[in-house]
Length: 442
Ligand code: XUL
Ligand code: CO
Image 1 (cartoon, rainbow, N blue to C red):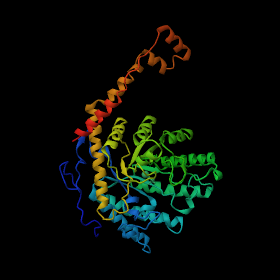
Image 2: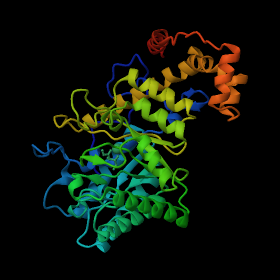
Image 3: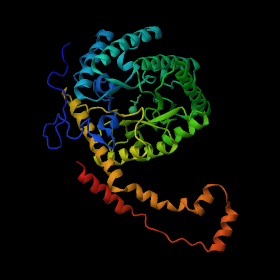
Image 4: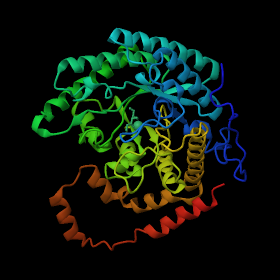
């Protein structure tokens, strides 16, 4: 097999003093942090689509990257095999333990649905062989039910039930492929599950369709004994004007309505959180609070651009508090940090893909060190516990236990002249404490 990245050797950990830009300075996979290795905490994954299926084209310009398997006129299955060889060479040299794919990233769509299924099955055979050879694992699989023109008006939320049926068939086949490859999760991102205008949309009907679709996914998961987690990836808009999986709180309300809150969790993407008007940490806290935190698509946006730039994460300041939130919620179980990231179109050297991922993995690893330090030494959690201590007292227990109502409290305040003095929230002090923890992380 000829190498696609002949100039890059496997990435090694060299420590914070290294000047080698293709070495890890913080990601030391076997280092123990809070009783677990960094590798087990972070569960890094590489995405197939931006990294290998995309050639750098955008709506204003042609592909810029050196991705020979995307050349027009080639044999699609031979190109898929060539792409997979390069992808696994990359995964292995980078040293992230997981990858994720859409069905159409790894296998081309055929002339008929049967041909598409056969193409996917053949490529899953090849992926299985690569995984056995390299020890790579699958974080999640997903069906690409948004690219093909048949899905222009949505997949599960399409006005035409035949499109719904097609999407159901595609998802079933992709769930089978994910199970065969031992996937830890199965993801549904509703690429076009939303609307462009209410003038032609029956929103209530579309939501019922989506509820039915997701119930079918869960029923099928149990039917085949898939032991991974089903995840929904919220995003507020793009490509549609409004997407139904707007943010984590919206998804939770939807799951409750359709009886799915114990079956489906969320895959939170950093920049989708920003686009929804929240920030990443808010989305994590919402998911943890509702018991539906699953996995993360790690990336970043651009503060001045209102679209999904999918850049590599590079801010320890931003990510430390996110990892802190995840650790406080118990950490990942089946999920992980999957880099849903793409190079800039001008980053056209083959090794740029390594630079992007090495920097991102180091950012997350150093953020883990900060988060662990916040938990172990900085006693940030005390700031929350002390603030809410009253709720363990008699009054707090009576209120939350449902023993008293408005009239009882009215009497209580009158009888006991309850007149609490405000206390400081200490925000600046706590923020300084976080900054000091970031400064000392080693
Ligand atoms: C789109 C997005 C997708 C999903 C998988 O914004 O994030 O790549 O992660 O379909
Ligand atoms: Co994503």
